[in-house]
Image (tube, rainbow, N blue to C red; front, side, top):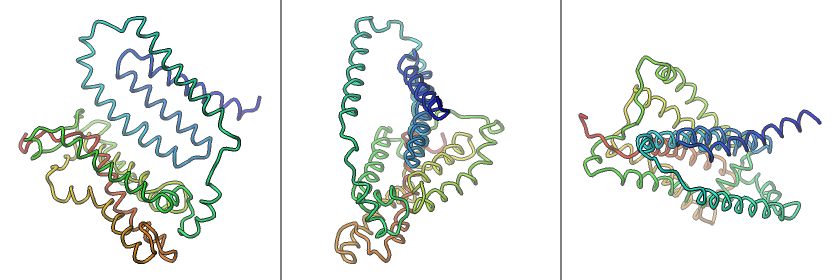
Length: 314
C-alpha cells in the first residue's frame, strides 16, 4: 500500500475515533475536547480534498470559537453534572444508538446514490469569474454570484448577537459581558496575549486581502481577529466593551450596512441589486469586505463573551 493510502486511512480512523469519543464521553468537558479534536481532524480531511477555505473555516469556527463556547457551557454545567446520579436506561441507550445508526445509514445511502460525476455549476462559475476581478472562485461565488445569501448570513449573525444580549437582565444593559475564566496576569496566557495579537492582526488582514485571489477572505480573517481579541480579554489585559456604547453598535452593523449600500448602488450603476460594474468589481468587493471583517470579528468575539452581566463598578 502506498504512503498516501496509509495516511488517508489513518485520518479516517482518527475522525471516527474522535467522533466516537465525543458521543461516548460521560461528562461534557471530555465530550467538548473530543468535539474540538474531531473538528481539527475534519479540517485535515478538507485539506486532502483541496478545500482550503472550508478547512480554515472549520479550524476557526468548528473547533476554535465553537469549542470555546462549549467549554464555557461545560464549566457552567460541571456543578450540575456532579449532582446527577441516575443515568439513562439501557433501553433508552439502545433506541438512541439505533436512531443514530439509521440516520448514518440514510446519509451514506444518499451520498452513494448521487450520480457520478455529481451535478455541478463549477464550470459556469469559473467561466464568469473574470468579470468579478477575483482569482479565488470561492470568494467570487460568495461575494458576487451568491451575494444575496452572503448579505443575509451577515444579518443573521448580527441578529444572533442581539439574541444573546436579550438574555441579559435589564440592569445588564448598562454593563459589560463577563468572561467565565479569569486568569493570572503573569501566566502563560497573559504572555501569549501580549505577543500574539500583533501577529494575529497581520495574519487576519493578510487572509482578508489575499482572499481575493487565494484561499482566505473576510470571514477567515475576522475569525483570527476575534480570537486575538478574546485572548486579550481572557488574559485580563483588556475589558469587554459596554453594550450600550455607540461605537460598538455602529461597528456591529457596519458590514451589512456597507454591503446593502453597495448592493443598492448596483441597481443604478450595474442594472441589478448587488451587481458590480465589471471595471470596478474587485475594488467594490474589497470595499465591502473591510467593514464586513470588522463586524464579523466583533460579533464572533461578543457571542463568545456572552450577554452583558456586569454594571459599572462591579
